[in-house]
Image (spheres, rainbow, N blue to C red):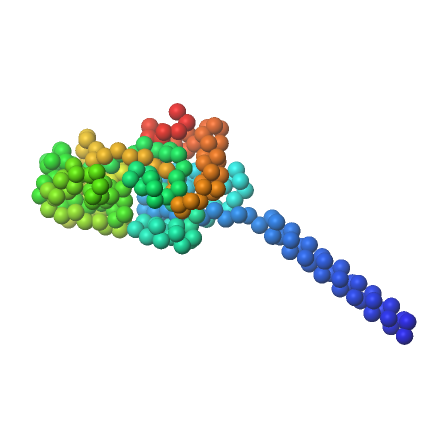
Length: 271
């Protein structure tokens, strides 16, 4: 009987140590698991975010996000989204922020923002042989811009926007394709006469499509700034990301990336 009792106690003690070991391993795995930081972006918005030839998502904004994640040891999740559905994605928690050439102006009270980091202009792209040289020449013409873009807002917002609304009223039509690649296809085919587009994206498209076919008008439609947008009230995460961006400005990585993507004349940090 005593021998059986000793064996039983030994078994119970062994099971107890095994359970403690499992709990310790579970705790260690949980403690080392990386925090995921999910960035929502438009996958057809070069040079800020786009699908590269090697099948990976890259761009100025995505590389900035990667560098911020390195600082904190976070795991970056690059989440392409339908730009017109960006608010739903953010408010539902599917993404942590909108970081992809996101216009601050006119949306100041809709999101919690970082500091602006890019000065942007909305410009006009037309066919080189179109004879269109100013915005006034767009009267009676078909104009396109990406759905949900800052250019779309500039041409349709009803508050403090009388001049742009008056201009848009002269167009034969104003349509909103899903992305700027479709806009350029419409312009090339003659379906559209002009594109309203952010200057950084316009320069990238002209470099890749050639300036023998398209040209940028000299005078922009408007000017604005880009910042990173978080769900309204999420100041804790915003502050950490802002501190990370500040570190990249201080160590020179921010400007290195700006130069890599040809944006060194547009950024408003690190100068």
